Image (tube, rainbow, N blue to C red):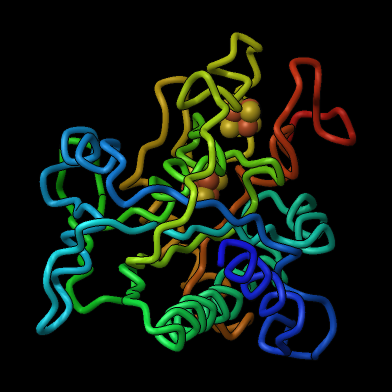
Length: 287
Ligand code: SF4
Ligand code: SF4
């Protein structure tokens, strides 16, 4: 069943026309990475301390469905949808606003990610299993004011970390084998699958800044001043991405949801886990 789940996710991403830009050309996302975390992994309890007591465990998520009981055992199925090279390259050239391709990937590509979540849930239900996509649950909430900044009742990035798919970064992303430029998603099921090993020795081990390699190139890329060696100023980033960018280019690009992603492109972690000496393709600093 492990293989069937992986293959179904990969097949859906590679075959579905909804994973293509509106002109039917380039895909939004390349072949996904897929990982599994045990629903009973103590890390999910730990997230209540790290993120906040409002963050749900997989069992709590499952129990929020109408008429559902808690789940004794199960799996969190997670995936990473890597942004294509063509879209990443288009965003590398930008200094203030995202490229049209990046903006469309953030908006319409994320719509495809919603379809993928629904598809994985339907696939599992079709096999007589329980399944929910916590990010689509009526119970999912954004919490604006926490000690860790803006957070939510289920973090897709933290689920992906638990499933061994990457580690966190200076700019609050998740650096995976396919880099930091991606969207991620998850579905919880009572199907028990072997958990993917978390091979990183440190929860920020893939980021050069935390690996003693200096870097901080993403700081220079941020047009909003939301990044520093101290980390990510979430309210400033949010203001820029959700207010200033939509006002400036939302109508021109015909999208409602925008992020800038400049700190995820033209950086050494853009499409891979960076090595100590890695630098952006052109070797130049962004600003
Ligand atoms: S650009 Fe450098 S410091 Fe920033 S997230 Fe990537 S590896 Fe870390
Ligand atoms: S998404 Fe944009 S505004 Fe937010 S930290 Fe990255 S570069 Fe800055």
